[in-house]
Image (tube, rainbow, N blue to C red; front, side, top):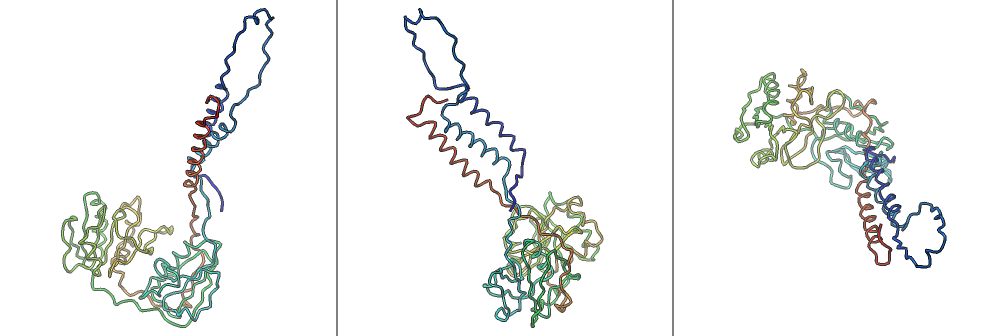
Length: 375
């Protein structure tokens, strides 16, 4: 772990340390001279020179410490590279955990949305194995050994091999993953939008037109037609209860980046050419929700104007389509993936606690009964 400052300019507040130094030097303990009548007959001698002297050094040191802590707090102290270097072993659903030899020191998880621990029940149904491998690679520390155990037959594979930054230990054991559900019926799309998102909705309408899909367009108050198979909700705020119940019953929805939906484990479902995630999917009841991670604007999301956007939109709206089933030996991850993002731990809460303690000590020293006149 490496300590760092996220906002180094905050250290400029250290200049405030001069304030207590000046106060303690200028306002020393008061001394009142008393003149005696006989003193006027004595020859006046020059006063000796005095060196600068600070009174109440403990109080001065406490005040300096308090100001220094506040300055570091404003500079944003943090620890970089706080990822856990513990080895990770991920098991794909469909594997009997009793037949796999595991390292007692490794963190064992399921290769499923949310990466639940292996002690929990095995996830049911098919999972997007390719997207999960990429996500696990990004979330695992660069120094942590990564092992992935998969059955001989995989379901949920992408059109391309996942590229990872780790040297993955790829173990193939007998078995097969659960097959995906049958393909969904042809898409019947309903688009609901508010005034703020209306400009961005034209990219959705253009994509559905390129796909030859019929689309029911309306504002957020318009009801969802009974035969709708995919809902596109482009509005900020909380997803209304009727739309949420429609998803729970098995519907598929694509929502805007500022739409508030129920929290649940997510899986990246769409990346740009640099690897930045543009959309993530999650389960909700018996249905699925795809959530955009950027506003519908070509500046924030250049992929909107690419020729591949209509097909990507169709993939987001039809997660029930059967993915590719491949042999695990032919789907080994390839090198060349993006390195894991460096995680940081914010230390400001600890500095806030230290500031509170230093302030209480300073107040006690400044107001105690036995001290001299306060500077």
